[in-house]
Image 1: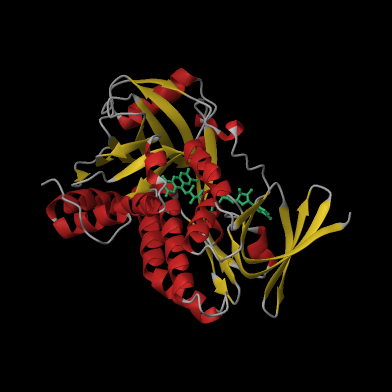
Image 2: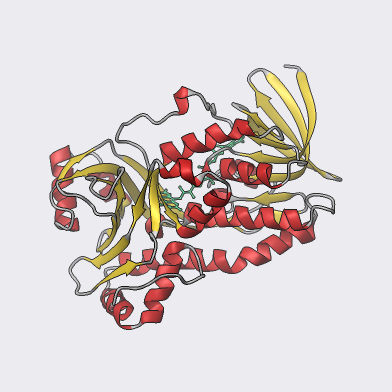
Amino acid sequence: MTVELKQYFDIIIVGGGMVGASLAILLAQANKQWSIALIESQVLSSDDDAHYQPNFDARSTALSRGSIDIFQQLGLWQTLQEHTTDISRVHISDKGHLGGALIEADKPVGAVIENAWLGSVLLQQLPCYFNLTVIAPAQVESLQPQKDGYQLSVKRGDEALLLTTSLCLICDGAESRLRHAVGIEADRVDYQQQAIIANVELSQAHQGVAYERFTNSGPMALLPLGESHNARHAALVWTLPTEQAAQVIRLADADFLAQLQQLFGHRLGRLVKVGQRHSYPLQLIIAREQVRTHLALMGNAAHFLHPVAGQGFNLALRDCAILVDELLMAQNQPLGQLPMLQRYQQRQNFDQKATIGFSHAISQIFTNSSLPFAALRALGFIGLECVPPAKQALAEQTMGTFSGNARLQP
Ligand SMILES: Cc1cc2nc3c(=O)[nH]c(=O)nc-3n(C[C@H](O)[C@H](O)[C@H](O)COP(=O)(O)OP(=O)(O)OC[C@H]3O[C@@H](n4cnc5c(N)ncnc54)[C@H](O)[C@@H]3O)c2cc1C
């Protein structure tokens, strides 16, 4: 193996998932003077291969208003919108208990996009920036701190690359190998749950309503999919204890649908067909440090959340936008200085704590079947209806914004 390339980039992003790719675009647009590299171990194809294939096995993401605003500022929203479904209302209910909440806003509460489409649009955007170099497929094997930044050893096929940078942004996912490599510990809560993902065909139109339903075995969400509110498809996220999930995922389609229908009810009519199912183990993982001189952990590498409230990507995107804002404000100083990275962290500290705390609390309150918790969640929903500020707070969390443009249905 020979060292073919030794090169410096102002900023290197490791990991071209949803967060790394979005961050690359934010940075490339923010300052054309920055030389940026995005390194991803998988093939990142922006040609026809990357286009969506209409199968039933894709995960979907509920984008908050905050995320939509960021994509709007990036000039990507118009393209993304061709593949999104507006969420006009969120309906929250609790199986076996009275009370339910309906959250409505002046403009759509958010939008749902299949990850395959979001990825496709992001990947097609990457080659548009002359200051952004995509290195993929290539694996970052190690990184070493240096006086003015980091040196990364990268394996690309048979080549070994040595890259240096003033700012290394690690976006390599929840089990971040590089987080471990630089000696940053992470706190974990194993929820002992799996999320089963599938696309479901409905007998009636979803009308743009996103349903969150809490059951004793765990929360489930059915998010509206398709070109219009008359579409009859929904993205299912069904949280179950690990052992139960292993059984449910193997059920025949008819049995799977019957069990789902029994828990979800008939709010969306009959559940007609289910696509391929996938499962994801659920944990809360929080890095004990997110920034060091010349280094920041972003996305799942920094915080991996329970998906019950659909907040992981939305929070990560807000982190990215604030980091880029701080970088711009400090652009006359050398890149990657600790005070600048600390300012970013201070600015996002409240948002991160509130969002992580909210997702964790809601997963606990609504999963626990003991009497006090069952009473609390019934009270919680009734309380939400009776106490507008509580409902407002939930709406604002759902929308990922504290600006307060939600109008709540009386
Ligand atoms: C079931 C479920 C439903 C969800 N629904 C929502 C939702 O509705 N709304 C929401 O906001 N969020 C949601 N989320 C959260 C969201 O999916 C995550 O926040 C998001 O995927 C994080 O992406 P990431 O880019 O940080 O990590 P990843 O997607 O894990 O990407 C990491 C990338 O790094 C690459 N990589 C790893 N190591 C290296 C290396 N050494 N060198 C080079 N490349 C490397 C990997 O190949 C990968 O492409 C959900 C999560 C789950 C599990």
